[in-house]
Length: 216
Image (cartoon, rainbow, N blue to C red):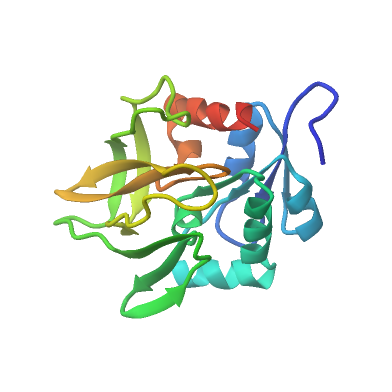
């Protein structure tokens, strides 16, 4: 699946039964892509970009992903240098494991790290928040100081990966809620992810998705 005659990248939003996917589809379309919502392996593999959304419980998202061979799709795309964007729990499942209510669930293990409950006075973290993007970011180009919309009770509070065999050291964006610091986004070669919802983040989120789509 290559870009259309007009030059629009083809993006698949991965359908594995997680939440309202239509808002993600519409947002990526507005960012300039031709979007297909599907759980079909071959279509997801052939797209210029793959979006992995996710809402709700970590374990439930991993169950849904496994049912359509999602971890395999993600791993095979990344092995070929093909872009993947994870959103919210779709970012969390890219890490080694998640722990919710004492239950540990194995993730896609693309990055080492544990998704755990935020240690803030008020949880969930719901609403608009600023982020601290690193120098050299492409995802946040032009929007480094904007606010984005978060809805989550869990996150990655420690980053342990300095580099890997795909690219140079990942660019990690942080945010803080109630004095607790957590990973808000990661840029790691073909693998990109955000803890916040760009599709719910107004103009800033739209700009971020355009940055990603134009990089495909």
